[in-house]
Length: 214
Ligand code: DX5
Ligand code: ZN
Image (cartoon, rainbow, N blue to C red):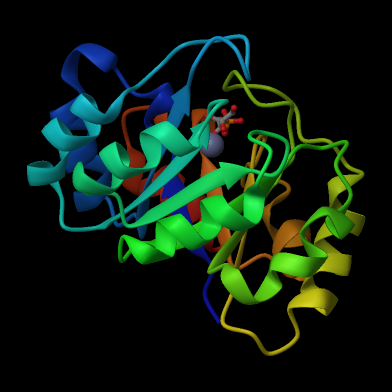
């Protein structure tokens, strides 16, 4: 099975975001990964629902929206209406993960849950039937361009076993490069986020292919 590649537009040129989304679409990405940060749950501020809505006409590909915000529930509906496909919340944000996930699905969207590097996979043991995607953070969220945290390979292997035959995507986010992509895939990942590794040089097609074919 080929792994899905989800370039993170956090590393794109924010002054030309629509153009950048069209460029990664044309370069063969599978999903568009959109990092939403609030300066509270993570030490950085990025994109809000108005920008997701403005980007929507630029690509028909799946919008994979990663919410690094706390509280999260008051904003889920806005991101759904803006045109998100997957909406991913952090297990560490908000107090009622089960409710947040049910709410996402009630809006007709795919529900994702993300785990920070220090969070055990056991945090999602009791919501496995309410999720469509698990996003393993392989860096501490907040910034692009950090190094992959090796301990997350073992977490991926455990999550792969927990998923069994459920139709859940296992996505990895942070420090993914053409050099480590093969090991991450071998640990069970089905989707790879890559920010700096895609946007570092102008040939996005080559950079995406290098990660996919690693
Ligand atoms: C980090 C974000 C990531 C980040 C990945 O908080 O969630 O999506 O942009 O960037 P790279 O691939 O450069 O580590
Ligand atoms: Zn992300």
